[in-house]
Length: 291
Image (tube, rainbow, N blue to C red; front, side):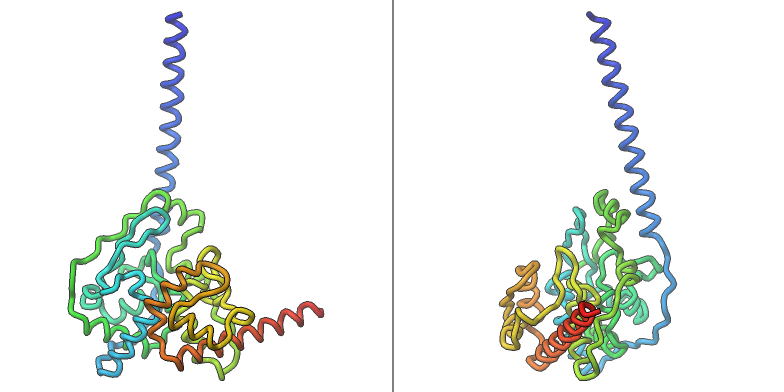
């Protein structure tokens, strides 16, 4: 009897040790392979952006920072804040400090290319949307951020947890650079609505995809027909009165905090573009059905 108990005991110990060894090996593989992805260096495109510091430029930069929801990730005072990404709490950078520490080129590359100063990809940065900022807009944004006094403390470097690392490996979470590489531009609906196309791209692309075609579990395709007429769209953007599909609470919160800073003319231009975009997509679908 004692021999049987002793045998079972050692079998349990052996199975436990093998299981622990397997888990340790799996953890090491996830850790090492994800770190290769995180450390991957990318060639940066040249930039000649120089911060614009005139009052008009600084005002434009502040407007763009507001309507493109920078505060949604970097905190209401842009001093950084907690952001949960696949189970890991990331402290976003304190922009009031980073704007004075980084060069114009480094800020531009972070915004439009999703690159850190060392050439590795930013972990969380909607560069797929911000890539469509013009040089003048980036210059204005930098000028605005530099006009802010440094407050608070620098944010700690991200320390991705196991779930986030595994998510990076399977592709359910993508680094900023990989999102940018996979991005497609919004549909071109003609020069008449180009202003609205541009505003929709930089303001809406982070949640609805660079092409505005939607991101699963985040934001739907930006269809307005059958959902929003012009008056309802003005209420959506200006007041957060959301209807339709997807995460409506996120849309409401974003509209109240950020999109409410759009002028009525800007909201109209976005609506005109989205309505024209719907028309092009409907025409394409009809043509496809006939063929």
